[in-house]
Length: 444
Image 1 (cartoon, rainbow, N blue to C red):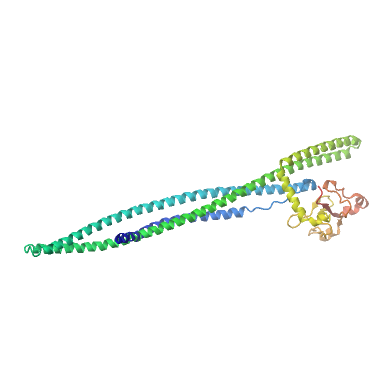
Image 2 (image 1 turned 90 degrees about the vertical axis):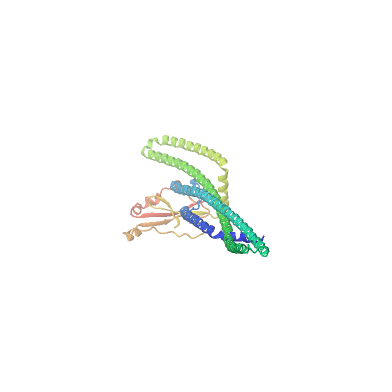
């Protein structure tokens, strides 16, 4: 029993060196390939993240609160948001496809490596078992030979006194058996050393199998983590698609309303030119204007009914808008309780171009009642600073608390000049008049 255990340990120690060399070469090549692949993956992921930086979506105000210029700004803003969202969707789709391919290739490589390693281990184990079996057979034969030699020596000692004639032959046999015994002892020691080497190789094989199993579990954990990241990316992709569809619907509505506003403005301009050129057809133009007004009222009613149907179909969008309005009301609860209004700061020059002043970050400059307002002076040209400063007239008109806050839309602003232009035409021709005024932000 002790001899068998010792031979088994010798086989384990002996089989360690050769298998360790084979596994170290195979695992080093596989680790090199895996490292190169993961290095490329991490680089692509960093590039994808650096490209796909998402910006927050700003709240869009109703089109009825601003002019055609404001609607163009909103359209440009929504188009930019739509392009950015589409770009983010494309980047996420590419990253998702790339990660799926990498996961599939990693599974195939791990499966093939594990199968190859287990096959090599099984083959090596079978070879070691065959060698151990052969060594056991040789040991059994040597033990039989030793027993036969000892029995022959005993027979020679017993028959020494009886057969003097065969003494020389018996001594020769004894010497031969002694030589055989010495050779068997030397062979036994050699077999013992080979058994120790085989046991050492066997222990090395067991250790390498444990390392292979550990690397397999680590790769399995890494694969689970990559699959989790893939699920997160899929969820972000779905949310981005929903936001893209919502922005597309909003852009379509704003475009339709903008087209209708343009058509009405063009019709009103044509009617004004016709009324100035043909005074005798004023009554007919008035009747046409009344018909256009009724048609516009009818279109407005149809649009209102269509808007109601649209709101019923898209209740989720309305709930989102209500949530944003509730959040805005919670943030400005003090100003709402005191009935304090907020205004946009606007500017117009003598050519009657209305411009909403903005901050450095591009947001419209707004303020509430009671806050100090800092009005910037228009920048003068570097060629004629003195001439521009002497011919520029700055005027400020602001709504008073408790009175009519003025027109709520750019189309309702009175024509510039008026009585002041009639009183001082020379002043208007020689100076550039810059007017600053306020527009309430809470009017629909």
